[in-house]
Length: 196
Image 1 (cartoon, rainbow, N blue to C red):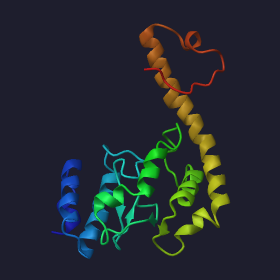
Image 2 (cartoon, rainbow, N blue to C red):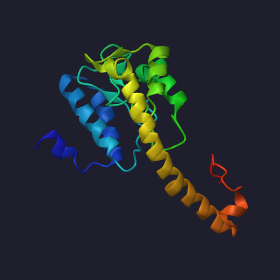
Image 3 (cartoon, rainbow, N blue to C red):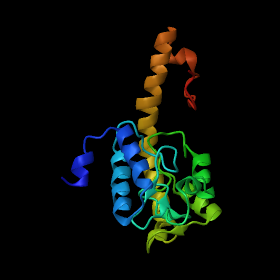
């Protein structure tokens, strides 16, 4: 039975325990296994998107580079040269955690495609190395295209966020309090947060 088949039905806790066990025995084979387990976690219902920077997820690539996310090809440390604890407490990871969430719309959590300015600021501040040839292009040569994409997606995602998430939550809160939305907010007022 191959590795993927063995862990297919593992719970999130079982995956995390296996990751910790494999980290104690670093080899090229275990780094590949760790990558698969990290990818498995990103599709778990308990793990939310936009959680890079060790909030609840990080990525070890096949070379051992400690990356904030499987799609964020930057690193300052390699697991072969430092402890995982030190790598995860690096200025790179601290800076990412300090910026989370990247914007208030949870449908736009990613610092690469939804908020590319955040990623460029992070790179300028922490000066990581790119972990494969060409990885820097989306932050340099293609930065205008990334900004345009993010801006276009923001228009769509912000409308959905406002109409389907914020409005629905506000209506639910208002119903519980016995008040209508118009009684709680001035007409046309933007709702910046949800009172709990």
